[in-house]
Length: 427
Image 1: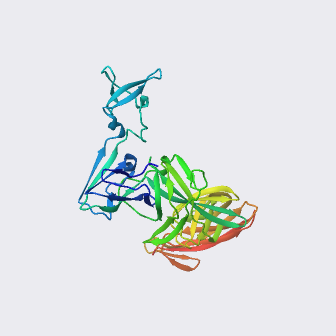
Image 2: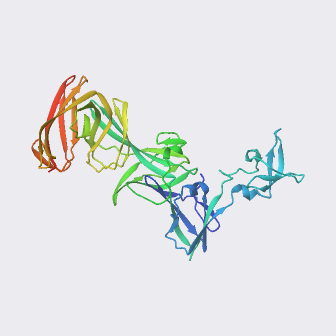
Image 3: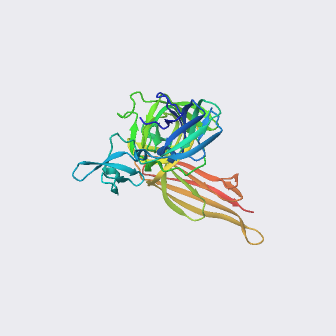
């Protein structure tokens, strides 16, 4: 497998060494062991690695240096300038020519005539590397003394994210997760140690590229492309507010791929379905449909990611969940439920004015009528937020900008009514 860092000049990398990856949601820290046997250390990074590198993040850890120079090296094709290559002719025969200039593929034939050719028509005596026309970047470090260290840099090319599946049925619900590790570079990684971090970590550099645009293949733990002993993801606890995980064994992250591994299997300590409405108070009458809501709690911390909900094996919706602490409530909606409708009627009970004739205190009676068209009962929940300086709901002073909360069970193919009294005091 092609290595992410290759040996050049005074750099010596053993065949058994491999990169360590610390993968975050929007970037990765690559850590590659290096050893210098002299006063300089030269490292060549393929252009595919350089393209995703976050500027200003290259460093040597554990190995002091007095200066570092970065430059662009010629590509493989340039190394053949002045040498004989072959051009495939229309009749299939090969014509020996001299490669004069690799930049525009200028060649000279046996008669001394010059012309440019297409790369597809060139034939070589040795196998060319991947992307032979692409240059590489060379880094030369000047060292006070030889030694071993670790080359580190941050790249946008490798990211990860969890995705959850909530399977619900008449007997309850189960929550499971997969971890997608994405490599968006034309560069494979032979990974020795892997850590995954979940949380809000910001770094400088270019915006994060959209992951799905660069994916060309997906490798799952059960596919033939994956190792038979696929790594497991183990929790390592918390690090300054970040969730930390590690892969149990080394693995290969192919170029332009996604490696998917089983992640979490948390137990749900709470699970509820209901038809809900989140709205704001208005003195006008309203009506409409409620939405399909879910409410759950898990016994583990959950990194943010996408969530697919299946009911009786069928997908009923998708959403995103944010970073969630253990036991914290998760609530989300999957769209309207046309079978559960509401009618909201508002009655002005009283109104008080000040000496200037301005209304300063108003009492309202708000009545919700729910209608359930399903053949089973439905829990209906309404949260209606009220703006104002001093608010009283059902005789209880609630302070500023509170919410009225209604809960009612609506029978199958039936109706239910719920009422609350609201006093808005802006005096």
